[in-house]
Amino acid sequence: MDGEGINVTAEPRFYIFAFSTSENQSILILILVLLIYLIILSGNLLIIVLICLEPRLHTPMYFFLCNLYTLDIMYVSTILPKLIYVCHTGDHIMSYTACMAQMFLSTASGDIESFLLTSMAIDRYVAVCFPLHYSLIMSKKVCALLAFPAWFMSMINSLILSSFVYKLTYFGLVSVQNFFCELKTLMKASMSDTTFLKTTITVAAMYIGVIPFCLILASYIRIIHAVLKIRSSAGRWKTFSSCSSHITIVVVFYGSGMTLYLSQSLEQEMILSLMLVPLLNPIVYSLRNKDITRAIGRRMERKITC
Image (cartoon, rainbow, N blue to C red; front, side, top):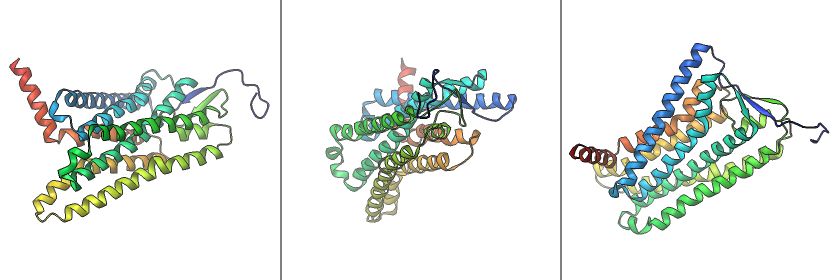
């Protein structure tokens, strides 16, 4: 029995609307999404394997990048396979358990990325402001202490929010006006009072989104201050360019997050916005990085020699 005395005998199911498109457009979306998924998987896996195999890349920065690339794979694998299945088969139905699991993992992924980007900002701050003590400060223990809480606290936060959503009332076939089971969308689809959940999300957003962003901002204020003290313009550019990849991803991450939660559009552009960070990470952070390109070159030379 629910709060109004209605007997709920069957587990609700969710209808993922995905896109309001024709059959031909659905095929194009299927090809686009599949292509994006394969690029993200192959790009991130390539860099992860390369970092693991190359001892020269066993540094704090690449440790955090490995975490970031692993997260990106988890994130897209949570959302895109089901979307590809929907576009291919036309079967929009998703079970209650699968929908809740997707919401939990997608929410956790966004939280983890926010914390990881903060850890990477701290790493860049230490590298620029304390270069002589960088290896001592950013030890393996410190890196682990920065990375592990990012995963642990995000999972706990997502678990708490998911437990509240799990208690919401849904009846029969529930329409989900989105291409995946997202927290805000599931709240709108519920017949329950979500006032308390909205308050909880607001509080959680403070330490998941606002506080990490403020720490990132504070780190770059100190970095800019340190860079301006460098007399050589070439030295200033070289030092600040080491942070350019991180700045790019931070802007894209928070920008796409605001687009997702403020925009009313749920069409194709929303997928591109949502997948932009995991799609750009290997390119922005690695393929334009000399250490990565040299490592790829060394691996290719070894293969040719063998």
